[in-house]
Amino acid sequence: MRKLWYYLFYSLCAFAIAFSFYWMATMPPRSRTPARSASSGASSPALRAGNSLSGVPQEEEETEEEGYYLCDEGGRLAVYRCTADGVPRQRLELTDIYVNLLPEQDAVRFKAGCLVWSRQELETLLEDLGA
Image 1 (cartoon, rainbow, N blue to C red):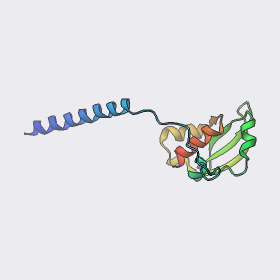
Image 2 (image 1 turned 135 degrees about the horizontal axis):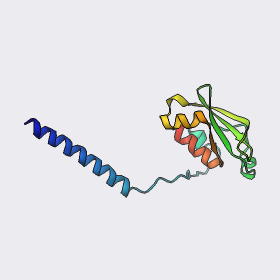
Image 3 (image 1 turned 180 degrees about the vertical axis):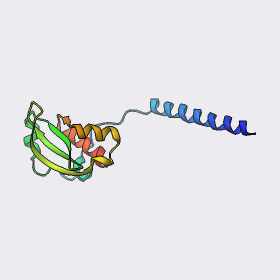
Image 4 (image 1 turned 180 degrees about the horizontal axis):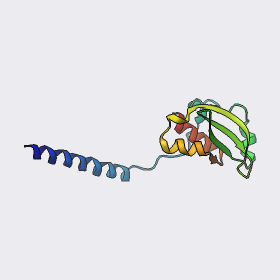
């Protein structure tokens, strides 16, 4: 009787793994572009995640070819504006995202420092981390 339970357990595990692979193969990838609504400021992904880049007007950022540098500062995620070389220049915000509470791979990446080259990519990343 004990062998029967082992066979049932392992067959259930194999079915769950096979079904998850099937599910991943059939589901379309998630769109990385956030949907825009009629109101401009309140629908920003960074604002919904509780992270506002209030000190910098958006029009100025879109014209410049600069990036953003994200790093751990005092246990929290800090966002810096970078030059075209990737050198941090000005701190934009110290977010409410605690690096130690992130998954290990993300925490290691932000403790080492992470460069992001577009505002949309930055907002998407902050939304994913803060949501």
